[in-house]
Image (cartoon, rainbow, N blue to C red; front, top):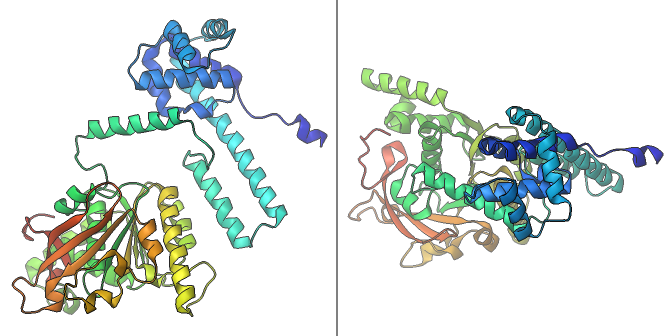
Length: 448
C-alpha cells in the first residue's frame, strides 16, 4: 500500500513548459508541434489550458503572442490569478525554440506511459473481478492496447471545443485535397457522386440475391482501392477460396474473360496481359483470409495488426458466426446472432477508423412482387442490419429475371440508405465475361 501511495504519475512539467514557451517565443513552430501533440497529452492542467487555447487560436488563424493568448484564455474561462506571471516565467525558462520537437516528444512519451499504466490497471481489475470469459477479456485488452497504439483515447467525455477543432482540421484537409469525394473512391464515379465514397468508420452494406454480383462489385472496389488509391485492403472471404478470388481479380485487372483463365486457353497477347496484371496485383497490398469459421473478433484482431489499413471487405454477413457459436441455429437465435454481428461490424469500423464493406443476402420477398427491385425490408434475417449500416446498396439486374429484356447487362446499384446524403439508383454496366461492373459512361476497354 505504501508503495502504491508513493507511486508518481509519469509526466515532465519542464518539457510541457518548454513546449508552451517555444510556441510563444517563435509561433512559426506551432504547426509542427500541433502535428505531434494534442491538448489532452499535457498532464499539468494549466499547461493543458494554455496549449488548448493556442491550438484553437491557430486553427482559426488568430494572431498568437502572450497578450492575445491571455486575452483568449479569459474569453474561454480558463484564466486564473497568476496565469500572466506563469506565462512570463515559462518564456523566461525556455532555453530555445529550436528544440521544441524534442520537448514535444518527451511530453508525448510520458503521456503514453501514463495511459499504458491506466490500461494495465483496467485489465488487472477486469481479470481479478472475473468479468467474463478469458477470450472476452483478451479481446477487451487487445482493443485497449490497440487504441493506445493508434494514439486514440478510449471512451470518456470530450469537450466540444476539441471536437470542433477536429472537424475544422478535416475541413481544411478536404479543401486542400481538391476532391469532391471525401471518402475512398469505389472506381464507379456515378456511385461515388451519390455516396461520396467509402468514408472512415462507415459500415457499408451491399445486398442482393445470389448471382446478382455482390462479390464482383466488392472485388471491383477492393481492386480500385489497392491499385489506384494505393490502400491496404483486407478481404475476408467466408465463401470463396483465396485462389478463386485471385482469379477474379486477375480477370478484372487484365480484362481477360474468366472462362479463358479457367481453361488456360490464352493467346500470346492475353499471356502478356495476364503477366502484367499479375505483376501489378503482386505490388498491391491486398490481404485475403478464406477461413469460413471467422468471427468479427477474429477479423478485428487481424485488422489491428495490419499497418495503414484502408478498407475491410467481408463476403458475406450471413455466413459469419457469433463468437463461440456453431452452425446450428433456430430462426430466432440466428436473427439475434445476425443482429449482434451487424452491431459488432459497426463498432469494428469505428475502432479501426476505416470503411468496412460487408456483403449480405436478400430474402426471397422481392421475388414475389411484380417489381422485383429490392427494398430495405428485404434484408435477410435482421432489421438490425438496416439500423447499424451507414450505407445500404442493393444490386438489381432485370436480365437476371428476364433474359429477353432490352439490355440484360444493365445493372442498378440502388442506394436504399445513405446517412451522408441522398438515396437513389445508379446505373452500372454488368460485364459477365469478367464478372465485373463498370460505370455506364465508361467503356470496358478503357484503362482501369
